Image (cartoon, rainbow, N blue to C red):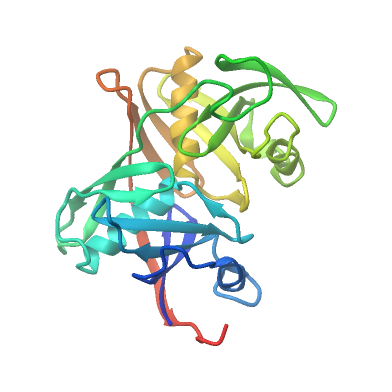
Length: 280
């Protein structure tokens, strides 16, 4: 089985093509391939599948074997993969995901390969029941949440997947391996949550570290970056355009007033290619 290893600012994925993989169970394969000691190593497995409702379909299986609704860095890598390989020849196209139809737009470099990818990530949902989060319906905006005996101010929303944002003085001092899982599996979140620790640098720049549901600490999270940008606007910390600083680079996020959608622009890159034994 041929594979391609890619990353979006360090959030890394293994890609395979399986046109008939609409309903296949990739749990065991994802766990094996994503294992960083005995496999290829990745935050998730992404499968390119045929679609009846869009130009192509993306399935993403987290490193723990659970299937995710969406992944912002994953879909940027996905868009580069299908464009550079000729599966899709248009610079604007549609991708079917469990979170809805996504619309990548490719900016081509001098080598005629995808250089930057802008994704219309759609509209965020703010109602507590849609996130979902326990409690009375309404927005979860700068709300108290007790985690491990400590009170945190959180803003939660659905950006294809559930995200929670909390602001800290210095993201580099957060013990993300300890506190991340406690947020992820907090009883307030029936389907668990992604947690983003955000440090405001100025009125248009926010530094972020993310603990991903089902994957753990990652170097970058696209849906998380979008969620932080939206939360920062809603909390009056920034305007509608925000640069999200991640350990390996920056994502530019626009929360557009005219259509209420969130647009993410950033790079994607191929790490290496290889062949995985079919018997796994």
